[in-house]
Image (cartoon, rainbow, N blue to C red; front, side, top):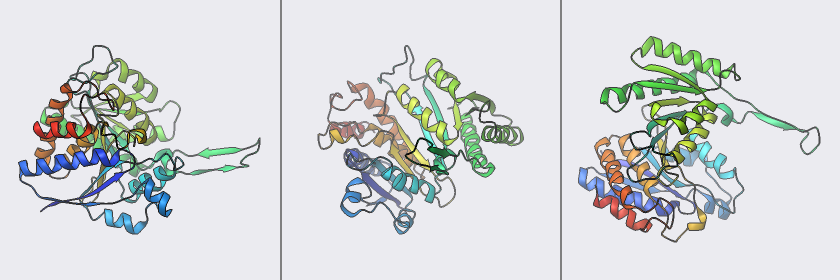
Length: 356
């Protein structure tokens, strides 16, 4: 059966990097002998500015008919911050119940890291972030706005259901890594239990109860969020698999992107692991509008997102080959930064294809 993909090029340089990912998809599908179909959607800033429309329930239902979604980037300089992020990205995540955000943190060969003396063997772990609860639920409000007595609240929401399904996914992920020889069989929970004594306690109890009952072979570890930020920088080699609630996960995944060389290489997946669920894969970086149309932006994060999509959509061998090709290309680049790679956007895409 053909792999049926929705393509959301998005804003700014999003269409440029997605074009390279689709080019690689065409090549790897031929090499691995599988079929695919794509349908492109124009959701993003330009559509909003011209029509006032972001995305509606009918359009989300259409996206859910696809096997997976490849997203370029969302963000337009003429659209007020928050409109597209909440009206498009968060709406899709919540509506499609993409309750896992999977972020591999891998330093590829030849890529500079700001961490002194660290190598690809040291920076190689995965962050699993709960993606549909916590402060992102939007519970709260503002009272007496614009006055000296203004009050704003935003509630951190944690449910046992939401925490447990994320934790079980993380335990299974750590277990698979251990069985394949790719991991150490350790899962680290990151929270702030000494201050967030309600939400933190729920996560901590669920983490230990599930681990003790169902995953005795997986070593359990715990970090406060502030300590995790410190250890990411000091000893990233300590980590194997990390599980974290939404807000803290948002913070440490960007820190992870920096220690693996920057936004130009970091990819992630918003995943619904349940049968029939539709997941969305994307480069972590933004739309970089100032580079639009210059053919200088780095497409490797988008191509890495494609690799993740294939690995999680029944074409693991194809996804592994794409990731292996990226590792062969990174040593050839002078930099991961736009305009300083030594190659154009399209040339980097060609390099990946040459190294499949």
